Length: 125
Image 1 (cartoon, rainbow, N blue to C red):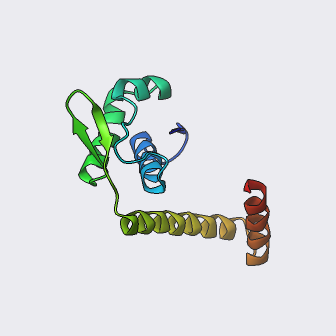
Image 2: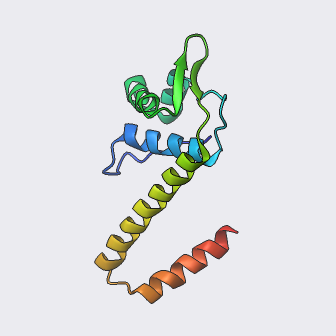
C-alpha cells in the first residue's frame, strides 16, 4: 500500500492519509487480516507527526475498517462487499464533482471533458 501526501493541498494531511488507506481497504489492495504500516513507520516515511497518522488511523477504527490489536498494530477488518462497493462509488462521485467544478472554472465543455477522460482511461489500461 502506497500513501502519498501533498503539503500544499487544502485537505489536511490526516484526511489525505485516511482517504488513501480507506481506498486501499475498500478496493482490496489492503486485504482483511493484513496490518497497516506502523504509526511510527508511516510517519517517518511521510515525514509527518505520529499524531497525524494516529488521527487518521483512529478515524478508520471509528469507521469499522481497522482495529488496533495490542502487539500487532492496526489490522484491516473484513469489509462487506456491498459496503466496499458503496464506498468506492462515493469516491467516484466526489471525484466527478471535483472534475465538474474544475472544468467549469476552466471553461472546458463536456465534449472536451469526455475526450480527456477517454484519453486518460486508455492510457491507464
